[in-house]
Image (cartoon, rainbow, N blue to C red):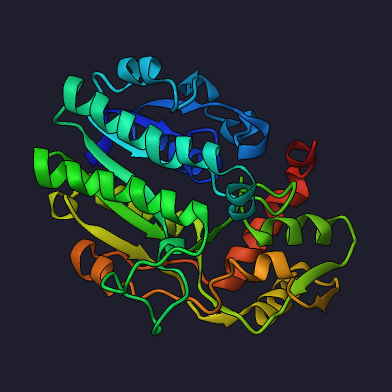
Length: 328
């Protein structure tokens, strides 16, 4: 896989964030010429510490994907774009829907237009989300499942995804979308629960505090970030991905209570309390979800490599060393 990206100019939007920075580390190791675009807006998870060890091997541009003029310049000359920038908080999307619309839908259209006009042969991978399915009609959820988002974030991410596929269908651009499940691992946001509940669980656990599990019976799958990056890289080097939408899932399927217990076991101790799901969040919760990702496995020969217990241990090890860099 590494040789496919050797000396290629590659742009990562959201490149100082969780998944983008892990991807950047892998691409630098592969010899790519990497440019990272990130707004470093405090609420969105970008962190300069995420590129510790490779900071002198990447180009960093502090820009907002909503800046059409900046993006017009930045997309030029790139061979591959990993389009990962986004607003991920479901509650924030309900409280500030216009900002979510601007980042997750309007800005995506602007990026695609810039590529169509100034770099029409670039290959683009878009980070979509399981959230666009809404409450599942059946499990596991495959790519043919109806799309019924339950919040503003899901609707805007769905629009962003469809713009990418539309530009393939109409203009022949080499785009694809990966619908990510709960991704976790080093460099994720742990300051609060804006990015993932696992983040705040890990912070509180390492601070010697109990964390809360809301409900607990909900079923989920989790993807360790290295496995998610594998999927992005495979899509980025394969013509078979062009115009396609893929679920990215994880193994095994576990309840939130089981996840909490696994986290405490990985930490060697700790405690949590269960509480009733807050009403304002229950209204936009999707209930049980786990992905059918056989299409990705068949098409790109992808398999998750990191078990949930191992991934939780690796994540805890990272934050034991670096927690202060992520909660300031």
